[in-house]
Amino acid sequence: MRNLLLLICFTFLSVGIASAQTISEYEAMKADKEATVADLQSQIDATTGEIADLQRQIDLLSGWRTGYSGLLGFDLNNANNWIGNPNPNSTAQSLNIGLTGYANNDKEKTLWHNKGILTKAWNDIDISRADEEEDEDGLFDNGTVDILNLSSLAGYKFTSKLAATALGELNTSLGNFLAPGTADIGVGVTWLPIENLTVVIHPLNYHIAWPADGFGDVSSSGSLGAKFRADYTRDLLINGRKIAWGSTLTGFLPYSDNKTTFVDELTGTSREAGLAEWSWLNTLGFEIWKGIGVGLGFGFRKADFESADLQRYTNLGLTYAL
Image (tube, rainbow, N blue to C red; front, side, top):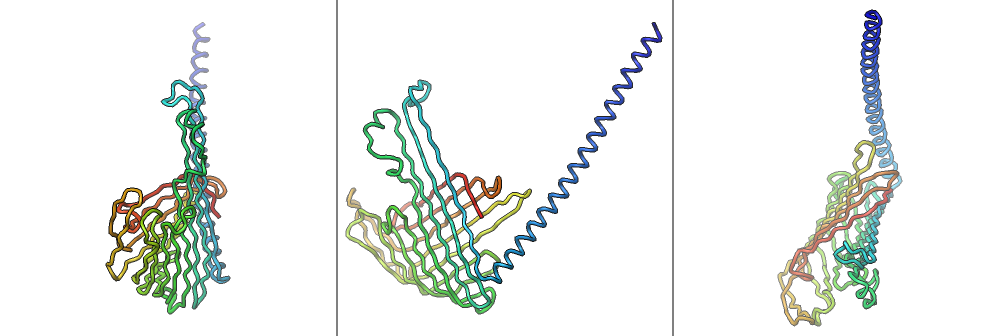
């Protein structure tokens, strides 16, 4: 009996030691595989970066570089007699669209950069069935964000980083085209300090501004001044996933501080405003799978000609980039 008990204890001890050894071996094997994967991933990231560099060189030799990104966000909520809700019978829907595209031609002595930015958003909410029946409007009758910016820059290069240029730019919206809106045309110099960054400084620029509807008899106002604009794009690779950032800062500083008086036809209030203005528009894209990801668009604008307050917007949704 004693020998049997000793045999059983020895067996359990042997199994425990063997299990511990097996776990340690598996953990060591797992650590080796993880190190191999990390090493392979770093090689993949390096090779992907080299491919991107080669493509940039190909683009430069061919002249044209093009690209685009898109953002789409959609939301639909519908509650029918759900008593736990603050509004048991309600509907809400929203749609966000953001498009950014560029076509740049860079050669040894010339450049031609074209860019378009479009952001549209709609939102419709009915907190009760009565609201839904009484309201005759739909989703596309309730715009919340509307931005359209088009630009074309052409020039002659003195060096690889400095050029004499001419710029035309339109900044407005689709739904309220040129109400408000601004347009610029001017000449000056453009600085290309690093790849994917273009800085425009045009001391000779004519700027036209159109007010929003409902601000008196002022149809438009123009002024000479200095135009500035900076466009930057950057793609980062983190663990094989691309993070894309695009940013545009554009503005105008008039040489004369002459102000125009605007009268709000609805409230009867009046205010004076000059033509100085600036906008900063940004897009961020986080790739999840084969170019599809999550994107964020946000921007700020200050233009007394349009509003005494700082303007801002945000846009969130799915993205696709190429």
